[in-house]
Length: 259
Ligand SMILES: NC(=O)c1ccc[n+]([C@@H]2O[C@H](COP(=O)([O-])OP(=O)(O)OC[C@H]3O[C@@H](n4cnc5c(N)ncnc54)[C@H](OP(=O)(O)O)[C@@H]3O)[C@@H](O)[C@H]2O)c1
Image 1 (cartoon, rainbow, N blue to C red):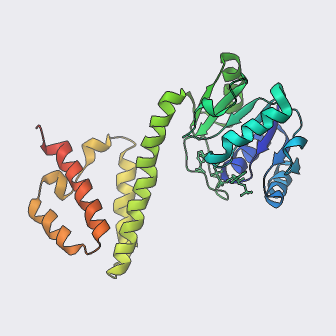
Image 2: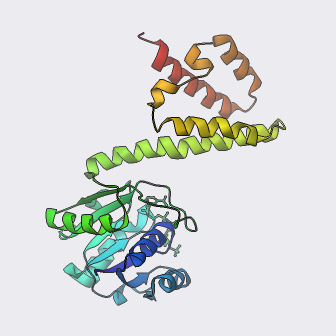
Image 3: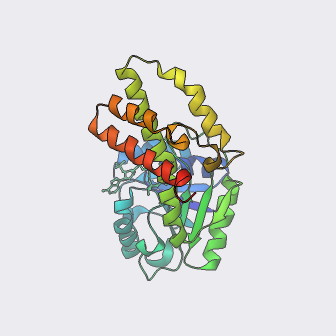
């Protein structure tokens, strides 16, 4: 089985550590800035732990799963110390392959298009894995590894991945934020948020079979301007008013302008 180093010990490092370990990969070393966290992940994977980049052993791949802002610096450091001996992969949706030193050919990306939270990894099956690499041979290597841990592997060039990342932020992070706003609005007005859950779950489930555009409902979809104005008056918070207005305008534009 192939050998792997993991740089990082957060959510995504745990995801790859646990999935690859389950498939029998030889996880040789976990590097992390904070050694205690490297130790914890290393224990799960039966590997060594370090906070010294120089101690990384030679492996088939080294996965860099740290915060986006530091991937480039760590990749440079690995290259400076280990030269071409450690093929590198990062896991970011926001970064392209250009974050790696231009001298390296065996570099790639595995972007899990899923929200990954340490502690909820065992429930994650067939996470979509979007891959890209600087050369085709290495891309095939990455693909083989990904197929071992997911049935949902897709090639996605960096130029497209950055747009997929924007789409994911809007669909997932923004939706979740709106749910959080709705929850606190309920709390403010003494409403049990649980009452809204069947409605929320139903709209998410519907997109399995229908386009979101086809299942939009609500006052803006119907162009009920009196209701919209009444609701705007009810909302006291200035920022929430702006969000309500902007999204209502967007819905009206989608369904009622140029029709
Ligand atoms: N979580 C997701 O849902 C998800 C999904 C797809 C892709 N990704 C990508 O996966 C990567 C890791 O995300 P994550 O969610 O696993 O992050 P995370 O859980 O917040 O972990 C961050 C990791 O980065 C390290 N780090 C932070 N600042 C550093 C610095 N200055 N120097 C060196 N290491 C530093 C941390 O080390 P310490 O332990 O020492 O703080 C930790 O190992 C990111 O590129 C992210 O875009 C995340």
